Length: 314
Image (cartoon, rainbow, N blue to C red; front, side, top):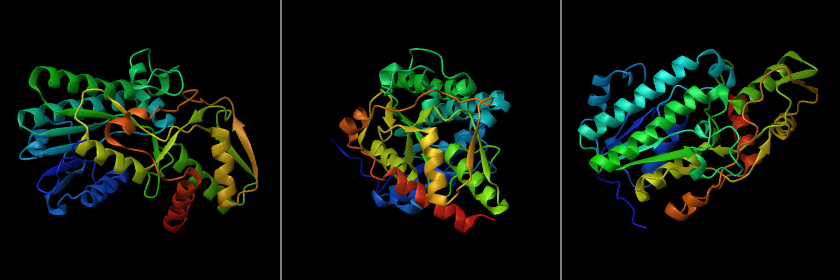
């Protein structure tokens, strides 16, 4: 397994100022990259939906790690499906093309497991990616991101462009997005429990019935996997990044309540959507191809995330 020397590479991390981006930059430096040669894009300063901005961003870069995304939980997906489809498709498709035209050496595209079919057999194997339609609440987002895999494979076939595609499972960790309008399940629940405690509530309403399962990957683990792939993986097949461990939403809620000391009653709002029934990844390809195995235990990661939120909650 040959490992790319990052020390002389000019590296662009789109979304590098975000939750995952900061961790990726930290892992790049730990892997030998020169911090002074790492640049980031921020949506307010560089709207990647505009092709000229993509061209400027890609110019002179050796490696691009594309993390930038318009993303959120079930609520945001239900309210803004058109924006999620358009924004993610345009950002990715134009940046990939600009990178190809600029002669970028390697493009690392971070996709989403929302691209998987709704009833994919568990654990999800990368070869199942095209065996059905995604879960309807996040299909526009998932399909837009999955289209980028096809683009990278097409550009590799026609132009010899070295683009790889990674499928991280649900991420969590300190510095996550805790905005209730757009956050994913773990930060949303942590904030909900914290605010219920602040008010002295005796009940905690939670969407769905608690039956779905999810898999969660700590942000530092995800960042380490992305950098390992950037260094050591150069094939067209997509690769899952996860823990290969399934957690029921009911268990997740109970664990967060336990760690936060909330003793009230959990009220399941069964008229609200559950989302995809099960999510758990087969992670063998990542282990075989570039040696990635998740390290942070789930309860430890949850505690770190809760501690960070309580320290920074306003």
